[in-house]
Length: 120
Image (cartoon, rainbow, N blue to C red; front, side):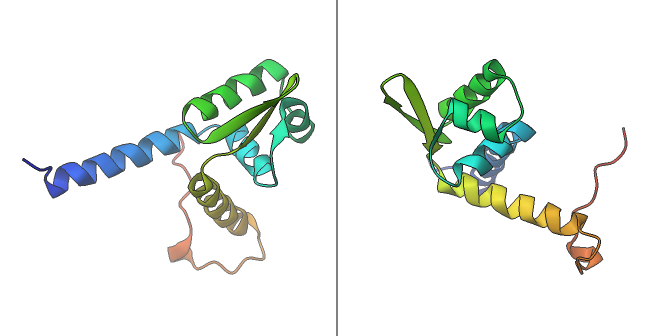
């Protein structure tokens, strides 16, 4: 018995929600952005991103376990790289859209703007 189209659709939405959850932390987006320019070790990432070493390591580990990052050891250093170009492409598209909308000079039609989060 094969999956129904609804089951397949649910699986897609579940997968996308899981990916968005993984990317819902600003520091993880910054890590992905930094690694778009090539592999880096933790010290190099800390030069780009204002956080503590333990916090950086925790986020790198999460992204690695999810398959977003790959890593290699060179002597005592571990270098991280993007393992998934689709994640980088998605992050770039969303960040560019938001940055464009935040630019007061941008001519983005209202219908194409992302709605701001509702106040809590």
